[in-house]
Image (cartoon, rainbow, N blue to C red; front, side):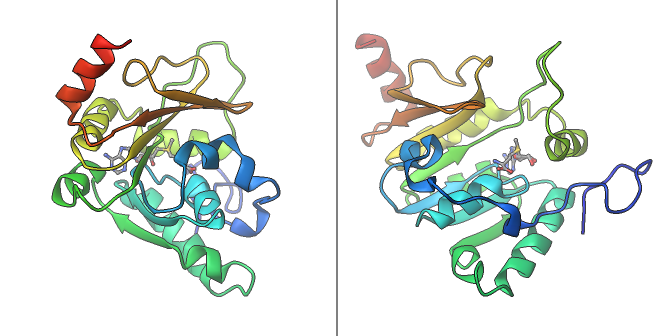
Length: 210
Ligand SMILES: C[S@@+](CC[C@H](N)C(=O)[O-])C[C@H]1O[C@@H](n2cnc3c(N)ncnc32)[C@H](O)[C@@H]1O
């Protein structure tokens, strides 16, 4: 199964094939370091599951939520194929995919997660190099995720230990003053430690102690 534009030939879209993913150095990657110690992690913006897979390979137990039925179907297809593969089954066995809105799930299960990970779609920067084809196809299918602010607010009201937001280098923070920022070549991981505070307490604390 692949995500494809109607003008493209079959086989030239974006399919999920985890056999192609390189896992060397994953434990020390900015993605994994930003998410901290291994616990129950909610990937609230699953997309085609690349980050969920890397986090599961690093030992996290991952619940991946995707609200686009098209994108979720392509991801489920890739997960099913990986589950039938000897070398990948143990990794994808740590991923549970749920189709739906992550805001609603977080509000219904606020005490369940140790880490909430957000990678909302960000508009392409004018004049920048063309994004990789899978990203362009997902963006074409789902649009710009202009409600990512409310997703952050839902995460901040939950009892998780940390929230991690992946952003392109050129994008502003989704919420001011991350406690730590991990940088990779293509993205930053803005990391917020919750310490049990609600968003309003959190905002006040960040404001008082910038
Ligand atoms: C940039 S992509 C994520 C890419 C992903 N991290 C990966 O490695 O493939 C963002 C995805 O999040 C999904 N999304 C955005 N807001 C969401 C929400 N509130 N609930 C569920 N999915 C959401 C979008 O439909 C889109 O597929």
